[in-house]
Image 1 (tube, rainbow, N blue to C red):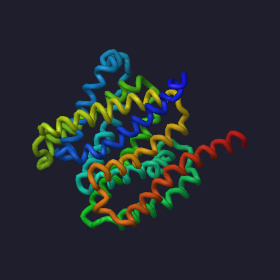
Image 2: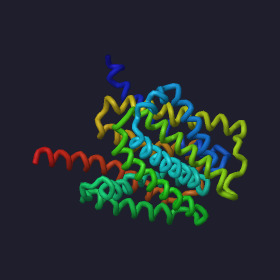
Image 3: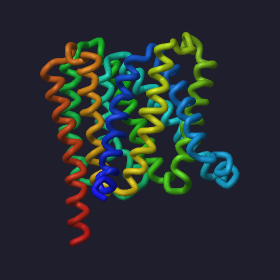
Image 4: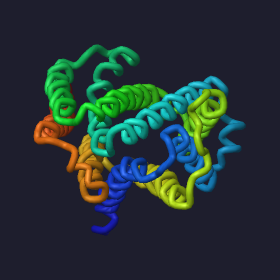
Length: 297
C-alpha cells in the first residue's frame, strides 16, 4: 500500500530526470539541430503507435480539432529546433537555463491569448527573471550569446505551445494528441530540410547518434511522457509543478557531471541561474496563496 502511495511521486521524478537528460543528449548527438529534431520526432511518433490506436482516433476526431493540434505540433518542432540550436551554439547549461524562463513568457502570453488579465505577482516576478538573464549573459563569453538568443526564442515557443495546448489538450486522448503534434512537427522539419538551401548536411545519423537518438526519443520523450502523465493523474497541480521545476536543476547538474560545462562559466552566470531558479519555485507558491485568498474571499 505504501509503495502504491509513493509510486506517482517516484514516476514523476524519474520523468523529470529523463527530461533533464534531453539537453545532454542534444549536445552528444553530432547531427545539426534540424536533423536531430526530425529524427527525434519521427522515432517518438512511431513509438507512440504501440501505445494507442491512432487510426481509430483519426476516424473519430473532427477536422476542427485535428488542424489546431497539427498547428501546435509545428510550434513544438520549431521550439525543439531552437532549443538544440542553442545547445550547439553555446552548451547544454545555457540551453537549459533559457528554458527555465518559460514561466516568465507564459505569464505574458497566457492573458493575451486566453484572457483573464495579468496577475500582479507574475509581473513582479518578471523583474528578477530579467535581472537573472542579464547576469547569465554577462557571465558568459561573447561567442555563446547566440546560444542565449536561440534559447530564449525556444522558451517563447515553449510558452506558446503550453498556452495553446492547455486550451485544446482536454478535447481528446492525450497520447493521440501527442502523436498528431509530433508527427506533424516531424514532417514540417523534414520538408524544411528538403526545401531550404544550405540547411541540410548529412541527414543520416552515425552509429553513436542512433543510440543517443533512441534514448532521447524513446527514453526521454515517450517513456518520460507516459510516466509523467500517469503521475499527474494522482498528484495535485501544485505538487506536479514543483517537481517539474526541478528539470533545469537536473539538467545543469547533469551537464556539469557529464559534459563539464562549468569550465566556461563564471560566478555571474551562476548567480543569475540561482535568481531564475528561485523565481521558478516562488511562482507556484504565490499562485497557490493567491488562489486560497480568492477562495476564502
